[in-house]
Image (cartoon, rainbow, N blue to C red; front, side):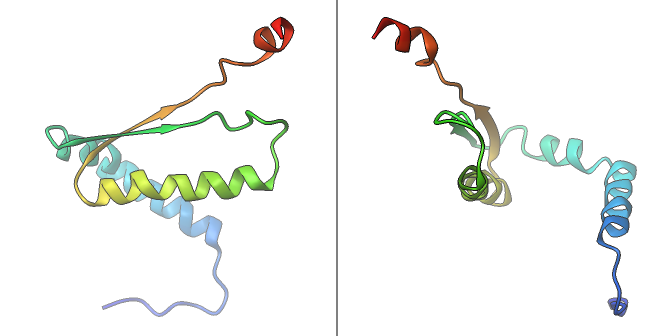
Length: 96
């Protein structure tokens, strides 16, 4: 059923082959089309660096927050991801 996995694997090469397959089969557009009339789920994500320069903690929280819309998509929801922004930056700091 499955091909035997070789001892040495080139993950970048595998990724390129998968991306090409997705392009050939128009996977992303078709997945969106399948959920066009599905129950919506909107995921609001905060700004990536609201509290300073990027660091490993930002990566960790982004990974955890990414799980929810992916799970909802797999459950059949139409997931829209909204990126947040920081509206309390320099102007507020200057006023204070």
